[in-house]
Length: 256
Image (cartoon, rainbow, N blue to C red; front, side):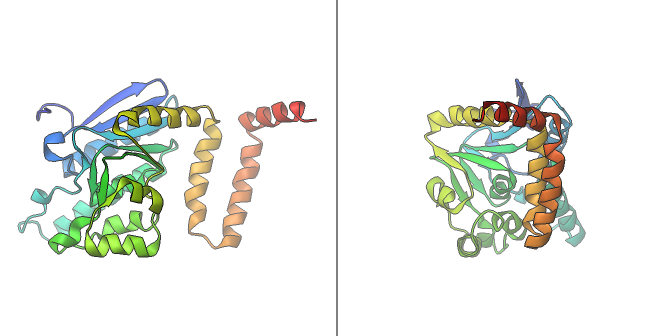
């Protein structure tokens, strides 16, 4: 069991992979102001390390994250305080988007509300078959507006709205069918599946991965003409980089 003296986020580096683990299992890894600040700081530190190629975001205990800390959202918190809380949450989520490395969510248990949002904001997600997902604020009279931003960018419109309007849970298999997670495996196979995915990414050019992640998100909300214009420019620059030059040369020497 974790104690208050232990870090909110445990950090472990395994080769070129940083594992960041939410470390408040007894509180279901709620995203308190302190937890969000700690996680944001660790993500930024990992992102600035050129030796790190992938970041895995995991959690200790039965829950991945139960979302915001409701004890910090009581009647004594005024509108300005609520604005500050959700601004901090948005900054955390956008930090993930801005990192050069892919961020993979390792979802071993329940992910609700802002915890589900955190999964959706990661670039990739691998879930245990025991995992469940919900944006459950509506059960308390609070529509999950900020989780809706991430959810609607992963899940088709009608399934996303159903989750948001009902607050009902979906299982890991349904989450995969709807695009919230990439892969679902038995709990005992979760770490091996994460390792296989990280190894596949690490084998690729870090320059191409970083440029490709930026381009993927930048082009999504552009009109198609602008998206192609941006993608062509990024790909042209990518093709002149050393990794791509070497890769093209290797292929052309093998080709008949």
